[in-house]
Every structure is written in structure tokens, then in C-alpha cells.
Amino acid sequence: MEAHNHMEKKGTVSIHAQNIMPVIKRWLYSDKDIFLRELVSNGCDAISKHKMLALKGEVPESTDEYRVDVILDEQNGTIQITDNGIGMTADEVEKYIAQVAFSGAEEFLAKYKEEGDQSGIIGHFGLGFYSAFMVSSNVVIDTLSYQDGAESVRWSSADGMEYQMEPSERTARGTTITLTISDEEHEFLHRHTIESTLEKYCAFMPVPIYLNDLVEPKEGEEPKAPVQINDTTPLWMKAPSEVTDEEYKAFYHKVFHDYEEPLFWIHLNADYPFNLKGILYFPKIRNEFSGNEGVIKLYNNQVFVADNIKEVIPEFLMLLKGAIDCPDLPLNVSRSFLQNDGYVKKMSAYITRKVADRLVNEFTNKREEYQRYWDDIHPFIKYGCLKDAKFYERVKAALLFKTVDGRYLTIDEYKEANGGEDCKTIYYTTDEQRQAQMIALFTAEQKDVVVLNTVIDTNFISFYEYTEPESLKFQRVDGGTDDLAETTEADEARTNALQDKFRKALGDEQLTVKLQPFKSDEIPAMITVDEQTRRFSEMSRMFNNGIQMPEQRTLVLNEKHPLTQYLEGSTDEEQNALICAQLLDLSDMAREPLSGERMVDFLKRSNALLGMLIKKQ
Image 1 (spheres, rainbow, N blue to C red):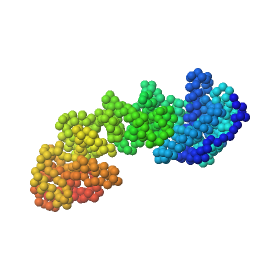
Image 2: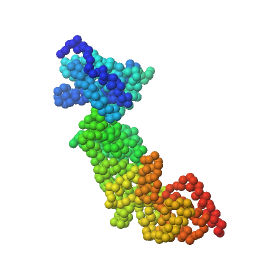
Image 3: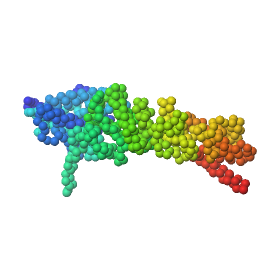
Image 4: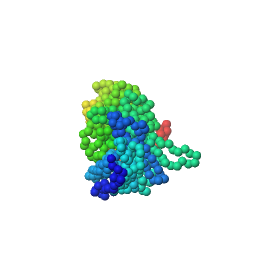
């Protein structure tokens, strides 16, 4: 055993320290708070090691509660992190702090520099103890090893480069690290900052963590008691059979601050071929999927690492909220490494498969319930289909389409309800209110119309038609009239004559006119827009700064309607012009509102036509 006076020494951590410590101290500003995670998790590790020794019978079980205390002293400008773990001897302090910890930091920073700022280091584990110098002007370690006869040690350094070791007055097993916070990092002395940082990184660490505030109580006030920050056994560490629905919901509300109920959840629990646990929640996504960003928190052995790491979590699952704990995931690596790592890809594929299987299970075994939240989750499912072919193959049997009368049908069910093998087309609407007249024409013919009114639907139906070329095609209710007409045959001469009349009356030589006998006598004309050119137009408007490509439009006249028949025989050019313009506007209004100028013209023309009716009486 060394005598105290032999312990007193000074030293330099490494010849390279002058180059590396300034980099550590200038660490990415947004990441400076990781010092607290690193030091607290080190304390948890020291406790875990003592627990393991006690389980093996190598040391007596601890008579005190295992715990890590974070002690905030704003008045004196310090933060202390104290644990009652295994502690360190003088030799271990020199080895693990002065040599191993620093070399770990050195290797970490070399890796970071090599990969470049833009690639990002995922977890920052490996920086460890030396992260303390990002926020401190002085760091002191007081420690006492669990080993019989060990003497306490005090290690101190102002810059992480030169240090001093001497005997300590500590009498309890464990370690206390005291940080004197730099003037420019004073925010870390505010209780709110420390509390929110601990809740961010340490909320589920496996050892109780207490926050102690040394603020003097005001007169008449009781001193503040230490507050436990963490839940040492988060739900994802339990077996799914041990967790109630109420516990799942309470965890969701607490962790994600979402006061709406989650729709349902998936409890991940894999031991092979990798260790992965977690819970993924389906929140209410609503219609516009792009405006709903979820939060998937990634943990390593219950220590928070980051939100939404797309290399581990498939991109489309980012719409969910959840926690995933991956103890085996290498974290002090770059994103480019994760992108190319086979282990990570298998993990991502496993998560995707579990989500898909759960959706199919819900559809198969709880269809009524599944239909109730279909409106909320369908944008997510469609997005997943677009992003991942394997996900699509697994969930396609559970894809539903909601009809305008509120029924939910699979593709096969739609086909069966609409003519069986003769059914080649799924009719849909993007706006039930604006397209109500055309919807009514199809429903009168016993044709189901489904509602596709979200941003992703145009992409999804194009994807479906490409992926399933032998299946049904999708057509909006203004995409054609063949199923609304008695025959698709047309008298070419009559059609050309009416087309000339409309072109002359409207001054539009590009207008295409078609003549068909509608099954309904109520409607005189319809505007149809070729499905493919309309989709292309919508996509170009979405991705080309609002620039819209032209659509292929046709004015289809009802051969049986009196107005069509009147126009065929009329030679009153002034009146014909009014009727032609009115028919075109009425047909367009059945699809979408008229723009300002056209609406003004339409109202003037309507008044003029009414006036002509009065004159004739």
C-alpha cells in the first residue's frame, strides 16, 4: 500500500494534449450538455460494477441505496456528480483518467475530424470524462475504491492537460466529480437547465439519479429535498405481458408530452440476432402526413443518444413516436458508417417487419377497430409503401379505401362490389364537396367512389398501378364518362359541328368537344381531364415552385339533353355564345371554383340569360 506522501504527484496527460483539449473545449455548441450524460452514466457504470461483484459474492452487498447525486451549487459556481460505485485506487485514477480516458477522447476526436463535421458522430460515447472540460475551468475527482485497505485519491486539473494527484479526505466508497463551471457556461448553473438536461439524457438510466439544489431556503421555507429524475425500469425493459394499456398510455403522455391518446402501439423485444427493445406508438397523424413529425428516441442501455436517427429507424417510421434501446449499437461512429453497416440494416429491417406484421394483425383480427383509426394512419402506411418495397408486400392486404358513404374496402372488396371481373377501374374523389355532382352520377350507376384527399395519394396510386399492373386502375370522377354513357360511340360529323360552334363562340381553337348519350338526363355537360396529364400537372405544381403543366381537358356534351339538341339547331350566334360559355363554366364549377374574373363573367352572363328568358315571356 502506498503512503499518502507517495501519492502526491504532478503530470501531463499526453504530449498531444495541447492539440486536442482546445478542440474538446470548443465542442459543438449544441452538444455541450452531453458532459452531464457522460459523467452521470460513468457513475451508473461504477455502481453496476459494484452490483455485479456483490452478485458474485466477491464483495458484501451494499447497505446503502445505490444512487447518483447531481448537486448544483449556483452560489459557488459548481456542479458535483457523486456515486457510490466501485471507486478507484490511485493507480486506477492514473490509468483510467490520465491514460485510457484521454486516449479514448483522442481517438474519438481523430475519428470526428476524419469524417468531417457534416457526417456527425452519433452518440459521442467515448468522449466520456473529458467532456467535463467543455464547460469547466477546473475539474476535481475525489474517489475511494471498494478494495480493502484502499486509500482515497484526489485528482485535479484546470485544463485537462496538466493534473495533480494527492490524498483525499473522502471516507465513503465511490466517486465525486466536482466541476467549477466556466464563466461563459454559466447557464449550466441554472436548475432549469440541469433538470431539463438530466431529463433529456438520463430519464431512464438504470440507477436512481437525484438532483440536489444547494440554494439557501428563504425564511420560513423548508430546504429542497433531492428529487429523483429518472425511472430506472422503463416500460420497454419489461415483458409486454407485464404491461397494462394504462401504463402504455401513461408512458406515452409523459415522454412525448402528447395529451391525445395514441391509436395503438408495438412493443419490440428481440434477443437474437441482436438485442433490441422498444415501444413504437401510432399517434393521430391526421390527413396531411407531411405536417406531422414524430419523435423516436434512441437509447443505449437506457442512456439517451439522439432523436430520429434515420440510419437506424426507417425514414417513414419517423412519423411515429417511440423509444428504442439498442445496447449493441456502435455509437461513437459516423452516420456514414451506420448507413453501410449490415448489422444496422438488419435492425432497421426487423423494426419495419414488426410494424408491418402488427398492422396486418390489427386488420385481420380487429378490423372494426382498425377501420376506426384508418383515417389517421393511412398516410403513414402509404408513405411506408412508397419508401420500402418489403413493407408494401407485407401490408398490401391491409390497405383500405374509404368510400363516400363511409365503408372501408380492400381492392378485392371494391372489385367484388363493382362488377367483379368486369371491374377495371376504381373511381375516386379528391374533394367530396366540390365534386359532389360528378360523384352523384357514379353512385346513381351503383359505382362506389372512394375518397383520396391527402397529399400522398397521387403518388401512392401511381405507385400502386406501376407495382400491380394487372390490377385495377384509378380514375378521378372527372377523368372520363364511359361508365356514365349509354355508348362510347359518337357521330363524328355532329361532334365536329358542335366543337366548331363552341370554339367560335368561346374564341378557343384548342378546345376539345365530345358528344355522348349520358345515362342521366339531368346534366347537360361535363369537363373531363385525362387522368395521367392531371396527375403530372399536380406533381409539377408541387415540385416546380407552383408552376403547373397543362392538363388534357375535354368538354363532353350529353347528346340526350335539350340544351345540346338546341345548340345543334340554333343559328343565333349571340345567344349561342352565351349558352356555350355558360355550359363550360357550369362544367368547370362541378370540379372546382371559378377564379375571380371567370366568376364575375359567369354572374354577368347568368343575369343576361335570365333577362332573355323574361323577354321571351
